[in-house]
Amino acid sequence: LAALPADARARVSRIAVSGTSGSMLLVDGDGAPAASRGSPRMYDFSVSKQAVGDSGEAALALLRRCTPEGHPVRSATSALAKLLAYHFESPLAGSERLAHQADYVASRLTGGAIASDWHNALKLGFDVRALRYPEWLTGGEIGEIARGRLPRVVRPGEPIGPVSDKLVAKYGLASGCLVVGGTTDSIAAFLAAGADSVGDA
Image (cartoon, rainbow, N blue to C red; front, top):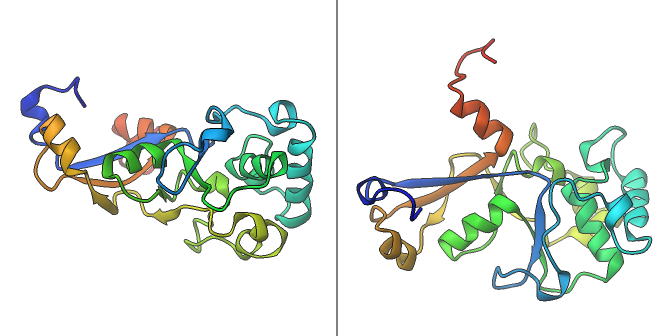
């Protein structure tokens, strides 16, 4: 934001954050990174190769038992696989919550609770047809671990909350500037390329 000219910042009324959907971290009750969990796990972090001990294999075995055949969450780099691997390394603390890269940045702008969007939440297991988390994610064995740790999900462009007064003043943003649901890096790039009709690529 600081790199934008002041007159441009003064016209910013909405901010959407894009990020890589598989990149995530655990945050505590205040939205700060969970101190004991180390660095965020990036999009290419593989629980089968990089998670501690056998935690990654335990996570993947649980996903094979409890998720639909061929679902993206079965990938060793999915956000859900990473969340489960964290749990099998050391049981999740009561305050720990999952945040994707874009979710975390958006929450720092608002100073409020973590919220995600349809696109970032896809690799977490969010059902983009029914627009809800599926029962296999909120119940059963996975639900026992994930319940209460998943972000609220909004549609891209839907308001999440206002930018904090402190940051509005710091960056000279428009009064009432809102943070809205974002998207993933690939979809943001597609939109930035100007594609707006069926058949555009």
